[in-house]
Length: 201
Image (cartoon, rainbow, N blue to C red; front, top):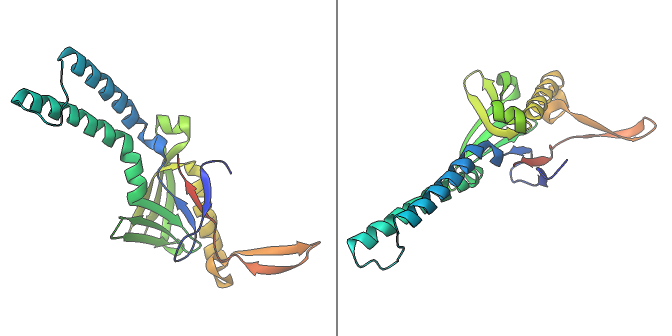
Protein backbone atom coordinates (compact mmCIF):
# COMPACT_ATOMS: atom_id res chain seq x y z
CA UNK A 1 0.00 0.00 0.00
CA UNK A 2 3.00 2.29 0.13
CA UNK A 3 5.46 3.53 2.68
CA UNK A 4 2.74 5.35 4.65
CA UNK A 5 1.08 2.04 5.54
CA UNK A 6 2.77 -0.12 8.15
CA UNK A 7 1.21 -3.34 9.42
CA UNK A 8 1.53 -3.65 13.16
CA UNK A 9 -0.02 -5.40 16.11
CA UNK A 10 -1.69 -3.89 19.11
CA UNK A 11 -2.74 -4.90 22.56
CA UNK A 12 -6.37 -5.18 23.44
CA UNK A 13 -7.51 -5.77 19.86
CA UNK A 14 -6.29 -4.64 16.50
CA UNK A 15 -7.59 -2.06 14.12
CA UNK A 16 -6.76 0.70 11.72
CA UNK A 17 -4.50 3.09 13.62
CA UNK A 18 -4.26 6.59 12.21
CA UNK A 19 -1.76 9.23 13.25
CA UNK A 20 -1.51 12.82 12.10
CA UNK A 21 0.56 13.20 8.95
CA UNK A 22 3.74 15.29 9.15
CA UNK A 23 2.67 17.25 6.08
CA UNK A 24 -0.17 18.62 8.22
CA UNK A 25 2.49 20.74 9.95
CA UNK A 26 3.96 22.21 6.78
CA UNK A 27 3.45 25.72 8.25
CA UNK A 28 5.77 24.78 11.10
CA UNK A 29 8.58 23.84 8.74
CA UNK A 30 8.21 27.12 6.84
CA UNK A 31 8.30 29.08 10.10
CA UNK A 32 11.29 27.05 11.32
CA UNK A 33 13.21 27.90 8.13
CA UNK A 34 12.38 31.60 8.56
CA UNK A 35 13.39 31.48 12.22
CA UNK A 36 16.68 29.82 11.30
CA UNK A 37 17.38 32.51 8.73
CA UNK A 38 16.48 35.25 11.23
CA UNK A 39 18.65 33.64 13.92
CA UNK A 40 21.66 33.51 11.60
CA UNK A 41 21.16 37.18 10.66
CA UNK A 42 20.90 38.24 14.30
CA UNK A 43 23.90 36.13 15.29
CA UNK A 44 26.11 37.67 12.58
CA UNK A 45 24.91 41.29 12.67
CA UNK A 46 24.83 41.64 16.46
CA UNK A 47 27.95 39.58 17.05
CA UNK A 48 26.28 37.27 19.53
CA UNK A 49 28.42 34.89 21.54
CA UNK A 50 27.35 31.50 22.84
CA UNK A 51 28.95 30.25 26.02
CA UNK A 52 27.88 27.78 28.66
CA UNK A 53 29.75 29.69 31.35
CA UNK A 54 28.76 33.37 30.89
CA UNK A 55 30.80 35.79 32.97
CA UNK A 56 29.01 39.02 32.13
CA UNK A 57 25.41 40.09 31.77
CA UNK A 58 25.97 40.64 28.06
CA UNK A 59 27.23 37.10 27.55
CA UNK A 60 24.29 35.75 29.55
CA UNK A 61 21.75 37.68 27.45
CA UNK A 62 23.41 36.57 24.22
CA UNK A 63 23.29 32.96 25.34
CA UNK A 64 19.61 33.24 26.31
CA UNK A 65 18.74 34.71 22.90
CA UNK A 66 20.50 31.86 21.10
CA UNK A 67 18.82 29.25 23.30
CA UNK A 68 15.42 30.89 22.70
CA UNK A 69 15.86 30.60 18.92
CA UNK A 70 16.98 26.97 19.26
CA UNK A 71 14.02 26.11 21.51
CA UNK A 72 11.43 27.67 19.18
CA UNK A 73 12.90 26.07 16.05
CA UNK A 74 13.12 22.67 17.75
CA UNK A 75 9.49 22.84 18.87
CA UNK A 76 8.28 23.82 15.40
CA UNK A 77 10.15 20.93 13.80
CA UNK A 78 9.22 18.34 16.42
CA UNK A 79 5.57 19.26 17.03
CA UNK A 80 4.49 16.56 14.57
CA UNK A 81 6.49 13.96 16.52
CA UNK A 82 4.93 15.14 19.79
CA UNK A 83 1.47 14.87 18.23
CA UNK A 84 2.15 11.31 17.09
CA UNK A 85 3.26 10.36 20.60
CA UNK A 86 0.36 12.06 22.36
CA UNK A 87 -2.60 11.15 20.15
CA UNK A 88 -3.80 8.37 17.88
CA UNK A 89 -7.08 7.30 16.33
CA UNK A 90 -8.22 3.70 16.05
CA UNK A 91 -10.88 2.26 13.74
CA UNK A 92 -11.95 -1.23 14.82
CA UNK A 93 -14.83 -3.41 13.66
CA UNK A 94 -16.96 -2.01 16.49
CA UNK A 95 -16.10 1.66 16.95
CA UNK A 96 -13.99 4.70 16.17
CA UNK A 97 -11.80 5.80 19.08
CA UNK A 98 -9.42 8.61 19.97
CA UNK A 99 -6.67 7.82 22.48
CA UNK A 100 -4.67 10.65 24.05
CA UNK A 101 -1.82 10.77 26.52
CA UNK A 102 1.44 8.96 27.18
CA UNK A 103 1.44 7.80 30.79
CA UNK A 104 -2.23 8.36 31.49
CA UNK A 105 -4.50 7.44 28.60
CA UNK A 106 -7.75 9.26 27.87
CA UNK A 107 -10.04 7.35 25.50
CA UNK A 108 -13.12 8.58 23.66
CA UNK A 109 -15.00 6.12 21.45
CA UNK A 110 -18.12 6.18 19.30
CA UNK A 111 -19.76 2.86 18.34
CA UNK A 112 -20.88 2.63 14.71
CA UNK A 113 -24.52 2.42 15.80
CA UNK A 114 -24.17 5.89 17.36
CA UNK A 115 -22.44 7.63 14.44
CA UNK A 116 -24.73 10.13 12.72
CA UNK A 117 -22.32 11.76 10.27
CA UNK A 118 -18.83 11.39 8.79
CA UNK A 119 -17.36 14.28 6.82
CA UNK A 120 -13.98 15.33 5.42
CA UNK A 121 -12.55 18.83 5.50
CA UNK A 122 -9.53 19.88 3.44
CA UNK A 123 -7.75 23.18 3.00
CA UNK A 124 -5.93 24.36 -0.10
CA UNK A 125 -2.71 22.59 0.92
CA UNK A 126 -4.72 19.51 1.86
CA UNK A 127 -6.17 19.28 -1.62
CA UNK A 128 -2.70 19.60 -3.12
CA UNK A 129 -0.99 17.06 -0.85
CA UNK A 130 -4.00 14.84 -0.03
CA UNK A 131 -4.43 15.29 3.72
CA UNK A 132 -7.21 16.66 5.87
CA UNK A 133 -9.45 16.26 8.89
CA UNK A 134 -12.13 13.59 9.24
CA UNK A 135 -15.01 14.48 11.55
CA UNK A 136 -16.87 11.54 13.09
CA UNK A 137 -20.04 12.83 14.76
CA UNK A 138 -21.97 10.76 17.27
CA UNK A 139 -25.13 11.46 19.22
CA UNK A 140 -23.10 12.83 22.14
CA UNK A 141 -19.45 13.12 21.11
CA UNK A 142 -17.45 14.10 18.05
CA UNK A 143 -14.01 12.80 17.12
CA UNK A 144 -11.81 14.89 14.85
CA UNK A 145 -9.19 12.74 13.14
CA UNK A 146 -6.67 15.49 12.59
CA UNK A 147 -4.40 15.63 9.56
CA UNK A 148 -5.12 12.17 8.17
CA UNK A 149 -3.33 11.17 4.98
CA UNK A 150 -5.88 10.29 2.27
CA UNK A 151 -8.90 11.33 4.40
CA UNK A 152 -11.45 10.20 1.80
CA UNK A 153 -10.16 6.65 2.16
CA UNK A 154 -10.51 6.89 5.96
CA UNK A 155 -14.07 8.15 5.52
CA UNK A 156 -14.91 5.28 3.16
CA UNK A 157 -13.49 2.72 5.59
CA UNK A 158 -15.62 4.10 8.41
CA UNK A 159 -18.68 4.18 6.15
CA UNK A 160 -18.14 0.57 5.07
CA UNK A 161 -17.77 -0.60 8.66
CA UNK A 162 -20.90 1.34 9.65
CA UNK A 163 -22.87 -0.39 6.91
CA UNK A 164 -21.47 -3.83 7.77
CA UNK A 165 -22.13 -3.32 11.48
CA UNK A 166 -25.72 -2.21 10.97
CA UNK A 167 -26.64 -4.66 8.21
CA UNK A 168 -25.17 -7.86 9.64
CA UNK A 169 -24.60 -7.34 13.32
CA UNK A 170 -25.29 -10.96 14.16
CA UNK A 171 -22.25 -12.35 12.32
CA UNK A 172 -19.50 -11.36 14.73
CA UNK A 173 -17.56 -8.17 15.04
CA UNK A 174 -19.00 -5.76 12.55
CA UNK A 175 -20.91 -8.64 10.89
CA UNK A 176 -18.09 -9.15 8.39
CA UNK A 177 -17.25 -12.51 6.84
CA UNK A 178 -14.56 -13.67 4.47
CA UNK A 179 -15.08 -16.65 2.13
CA UNK A 180 -12.09 -18.85 1.45
CA UNK A 181 -11.77 -21.76 -0.98
CA UNK A 182 -11.85 -22.60 -4.69
CA UNK A 183 -14.73 -22.59 -7.20
CA UNK A 184 -17.22 -21.40 -4.62
CA UNK A 185 -16.77 -24.52 -2.46
CA UNK A 186 -14.89 -23.10 0.39
CA UNK A 187 -15.21 -22.43 4.00
CA UNK A 188 -16.04 -19.25 5.89
CA UNK A 189 -14.11 -17.66 8.65
CA UNK A 190 -14.98 -14.59 10.63
CA UNK A 191 -12.89 -11.53 10.09
CA UNK A 192 -12.23 -11.04 13.80
CA UNK A 193 -9.71 -8.29 13.45
CA UNK A 194 -9.00 -5.51 11.02
CA UNK A 195 -5.35 -5.07 10.09
CA UNK A 196 -3.66 -2.29 11.96
CA UNK A 197 -2.24 0.35 9.69
CA UNK A 198 -0.46 3.53 10.56
CA UNK A 199 -1.25 6.39 8.20
CA UNK A 200 1.55 8.84 8.62
CA UNK A 201 3.51 11.33 6.65
